[in-house]
Length: 509
Ligand code: BG6
Image (tube, rainbow, N blue to C red; front, side, top):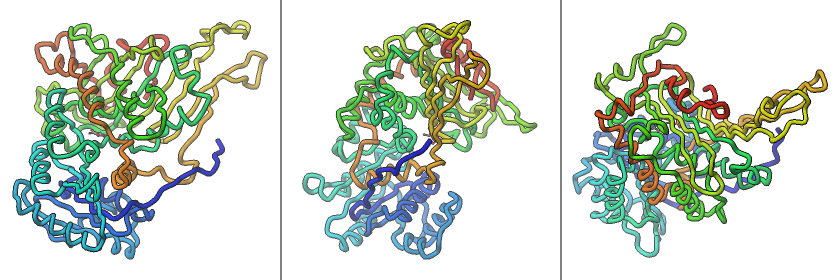
């Protein structure tokens, strides 16, 4: 496919400091510092900025910088020395206990010293910390005046928070109460890194910057929609978090339901943050609730867990044998479900959702399956024998999309076959930006379009609450089974038998 020059307006934000709580952790090293550095390389960091790492581990500024230099090279970023020296001259570190007032006094001291050089400077607090200390840090930030905005959001103070946003409706509501006692909604940026992916944002562009899709984007033409987020990695070193969380909370409450909202929402009136989030909320509100009865529930959503398996002679352990996982864990590492949206546009369309760990490969995609043609004019080919059109939006890897259509193939008069109209992002020549680059830039610029509003969090928990409740009850294991699947397979066989039908069997991973 040929592409015209893109319209890419991007400007650097005004002066600000970025305080990373949990700076000695995994996310800072793997994602945040590399993303900030890439923005710096692209001239998209403020002319004047301070990155202030904060964590309990004692470290000097120099030690922190050298760790973060290491993180850049582990992220595969080749760093010209001059540029990295320039970047790291803006990076500092404060260590301290999160419950100690003195920690916040030191942070304030660093921020004030930096702010002397620029009249109006924003503050971004990135809370990359475990839920157990989250409320404490938030409270201390509030009590010590660090997130206080003077007048109408100027200079701005923003807080980025990472999931988990609670464990269910009631804990999410508690969390929201804490947030709103310290911050105004406009100061809160709830991150879902999937929304920062170019390919996820492309769902809106595909749908609303073209005329060809929207007229057929409904139950008259679409038979089913499949959303798959498959990972080849297992639980890795995150058993402590994952075993208490499970895949439904880890992937469905956020990434999968956000993808679904973008695919199925009504057109917003503008690309403005609140308008888009209004439509997402409406969509989440239209999801057909799950039944409370566990046996009815198991016809709509199932869970699985990986057992051991091998590929090319390499053996992968079962989830229960991973370090830190209890031997009798019933935590799900795979979920597949059939959702319905009760509105005019989607009545009768099946939305098949699946996500799992330690599957045969890493792939995230949205597959839109169109209905069969109503009548065949092609001799002995009946309508049912002619392949249905399919639009596949490839979120990752091999980012892009393809449209499968039928076409005349060389040969006899009726020689027909499926062909692909395919677009690959890599053909554009520019690398697809890392999600965290987009999201950090947006927070510095005050654009919350790609962040989740509190009503969407509440609606998604309310939708999943009956499933969580049924699954947490070990007594329900007979009606809500845990299906085992071999590591590196396509998931439990039952996922095919329960959800497969002639028209909407799962696409191969
Ligand atoms: C995170 C989940 O939100 O997303 C992880 O907590 C998961 O369990 C990750 O591995 C997947 O993200 P990506 O961008 O690699 O698809």
